[in-house]
Length: 151
Image (tube, rainbow, N blue to C red; front, side):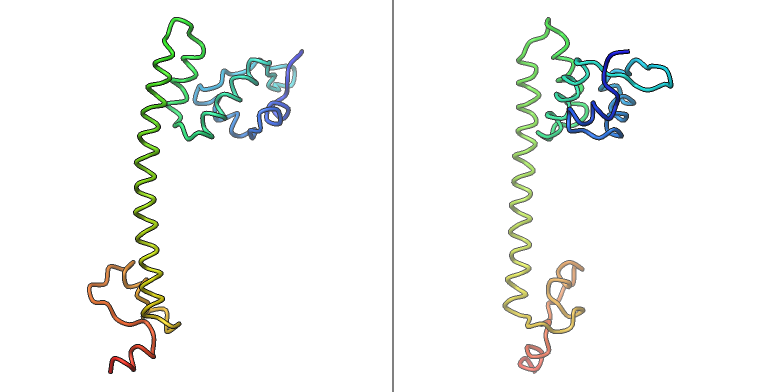
């Protein structure tokens, strides 16, 4: 029987065999024909579809979005504007995540700066970073030298 075994499909598409089986299980990739010994056999169309799925995932599209995009590839009666709308929605999500990551970066930088200003390697339990992460209301110096200097 012609076609590719799962290992060859994985190699050609830079995807793992467990991922291929998962995509089959959730219906993103059609279940393949099987040969004697119940081995899966894949065709060139499976290589194209799986490459498409992998690329969508690399761009961060969720499984449901990939399912919609794959459906567009298979249906010539649907408009490419549907793909544009899916990509636009994903872009808005990515931008929101970037804003969240920038805010997170500022918070972590503030932790580090505060520790640099107030700590010189004192006991871990007294660290301002750990206090902030623990939600401590009152800030305390995190090193013995600051504690001595404050006394």
